[in-house]
Image (cartoon, rainbow over all chains, first blue to last red; front, top):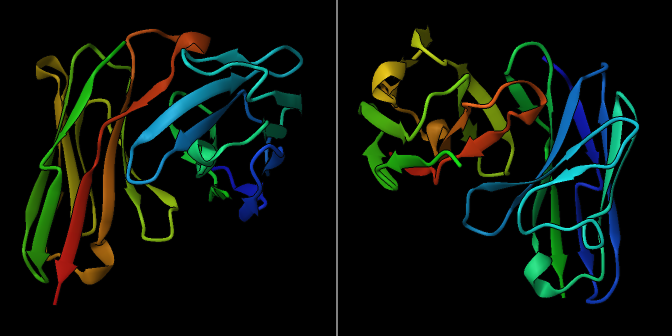
Length: 113
Length: 112
């Protein structure tokens, strides 16, 4: 299984600012994903991070709010822009290797005040 | 898109008891995974089980793909089993269009 790390592990940010979350994988992976988990809720897919091209966003998520980069097969970033308290969530990076099994990073716990 | 329902939503057990968690899904799947989210938020892979039965220690899982459900069995529960259990499915699209959809989860609390 892949070993996934995320930075930062948690942060407290002010309304109107932006935060960039980094995801690093210890091996090359075909597919990388970003999920959001709002307090007490399940996980929702934000987007698929495509290497060398623009990310594919799910309904309800837009590039201006959640820009994503994926410069190579082991690294991706998610930026949460112009934050409001409603953006307080856990953000998780996920990867898929062989077949369909997915693995998740430890998450970034974001609080917006 | 595919719908995933889990039951029960909440479960309280005494240590040593057994339990069964259920996951129903609305379409054919390429992938079905069970995860345990511990109190610190980490998602731990329990089973990759698009069909059939698997066992790992006190945990086992069965997926009946033709009837679109999966069951997670926890035997002799321990306080460390507490947390939220998620079922997630991927399908019926394949390749780069496939994506994991999570159920609503079952929150388990194991007491002494």
